[in-house]
Image (cartoon, rainbow, N blue to C red; front, side, top):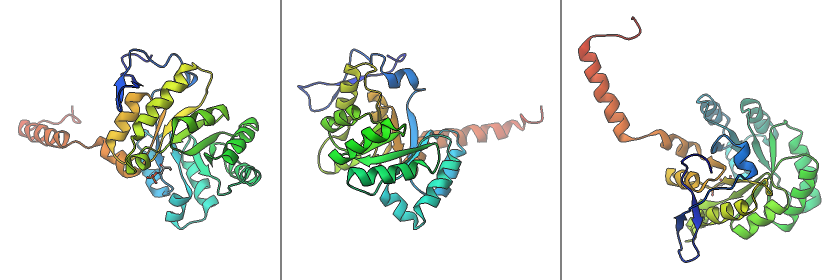
Length: 256
Ligand code: G3P
């Protein structure tokens, strides 16, 4: 268990998430990772450029809807993003059968060395995941809505599995409960599953906090929510008061 981190596990008697006594038991992801990673969920190159400047961005996820929003050429957009971001950049296949997913996935992987190929959580997607992974291509299995699906993604050798918490919440389910179940299952097998939990479909800062408390490996966050994470009205108020008092002293720090 990482020092002092709060851990949650799934209590069968409770519909919610409960604090666990134990930790992650030294999973592969835990041994490899420097804490929770932050990806941004967008294909907007200008937004990404701004966020890269913060030094807080570990990667990017895109999907066909996000690319469509830009109105730009898919490959051009991805090339630009991969050049901007040193971390993994997820690019999704549009095919639905395994063979076509393999063709598309290999083409996408040629764009840059930091491409992660995204495939949907279907039987064909899982087969493509296994083959791409065996060929040395990183795969993000997306559109995951249950722990059972996440178990299959791990068995298929996925580097990431993406549970969509917001879309589950939208239909009256508990998205974070699914994330907690996946964490529990993966941790039961120590480092045997190398799959990282990439929490997707994040709608607000509380999703990010809940994902971190559960011990998810990655949160992919829309730019707007990333900006919300830093804001607090008491920070603004406190800063204004400090600056007003400082001005009264007539002193400067830079000139010392
Ligand atoms: O990129 C996948 C996921 O994050 C999409 O989220 O908001 O369309 O449910 P959303």
